Image (cartoon, rainbow, N blue to C red):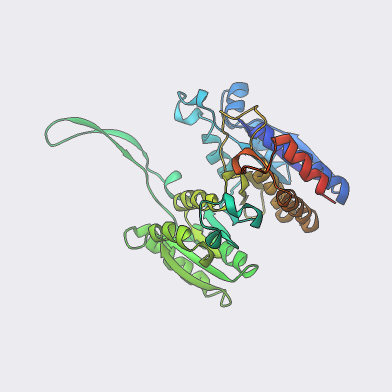
Length: 362
């Protein structure tokens, strides 16, 4: 029995996770996987039910599971809440509770979607990047942080906001190992992205990564400043194999890179721990509350996240590959959701494209 904690979240999270569960059910029947689901609230849904975005019971459900599948969190109706009560705070909380320190975001362009990419087909074709983002450090978690008041030289009182960008050697070492091991299974190249020309924390990041690289002589290590990397992702994305970077840089770069694939609705992710706690799988996009309930959102990112779960958490590579092949076959037959639609192709609802993917799994 493989236990999966299912966190629907907010907005379109309900629809896209339901699509992924339907696909998993089909794969489970074909490959005899024996999957069991345990649902728990998170984000705005949890705030409505329990008064907090991440209830202890949800954390307990996740810890008792073999893997976690998450939709998305956030909704404009909660924007007026105190920061600690907003749905998005649950994401930082669950990562910390499950010790999810490594986020893997594959950016792969389907040939069938080259025309959906904002880049020229010649640039977007064959792009296959793995972004390895550290998840538990950096400015999102660094202390001290806050907003305080200070008096200026001309005796005015103004507010000052501050966050501490911080990493220690152990945090950098463990994420570096994840990146190099990923590269060994790919094209054996790691690009460490930082801002070492300005930031002390980036200088340490680069030094520690270089030390770890000595343990992987078969992997080529290069370094690049984050601003240049942002430009190179548009100019020549095929130069990258594995991009290793910190939390805030990885957050920004992975969203930029996702557009190469044609839509945020196409990109999955896996958040990994040291193996003592379950991994978490989710699409990289948000909850899109304006589209919720309209049956128009693209579920493919979440379905691909479920595929990653089968491979990384359950070592069911054949089952995972059957999902990937089914998605490619459906796209090849010119079926598209609204976000990747082109005139003359088959416009599909969320449920319709899910049905088509399920029909292709064998």
